[in-house]
Image 1 (cartoon, one colour):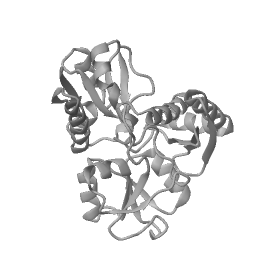
Image 2: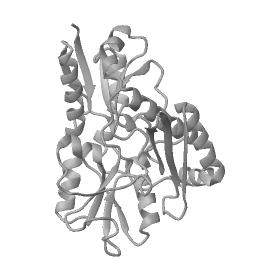
Image 3: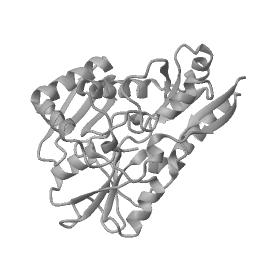
Image 4: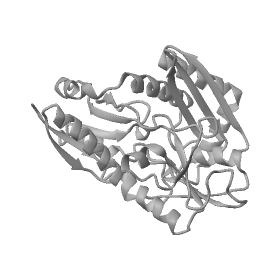
Length: 311
């Protein structure tokens, strides 16, 4: 079997993900080495990433290593990837999906509803901020940077009354002690691709494609393809207030999506079912744009945003 080199960010969660894929590949008889690569997003720690506006914040340097042949495949959180793979790359696999939901974490309060007026809530996502503001306009939403451990430490130290995180990262790291509420999709629609891992490879590399094919999960591929088709239709990434969640119900895809004004004053939600992932994503995206989504997104792109993108 081949010796495979995996490119990964160096955060605790990224390394968990890389080691998880490494173990599965070793189970197939491969020798595997993990190459830690520092990305632009890892280097910028004191500026809101959405203000920087650089595409591929957490992927560019890893893709350069892949292109140059220093690594054979890259493991990413799918939600970090642009909706179209750059020239020369493709997604060799999308893994079985972890819990895709957002969760409410607190050491004092059991739910969003229990928070007192003007409670401080930390989130790294404009998407989360917008939906939270729509639900509780009285809350103080404050930017939150750092890895999972750093964010939880800030919660425990009292910097925040609560924080909102992705369930998947907490589940993978076994850090669920502060999870008080799994937030329903109808309240807080997740990011497109949340909970899924993407295995990025060089386009046309048949040997590596064959090696990682067993990692591809048909259900995760269909649902995330649908979500990313919607995101592409809306022209957005994880720096804008767009949520998308697709699941298979009775053999058909069911997509729920949201576009929201950052201050929560306008929240547009749309849900439909269909059989073709891309067509369904584009149809729901069109519906949101026509209902006022275009005006919201134009305003966001025009004024810039003041909170960091989610990692």
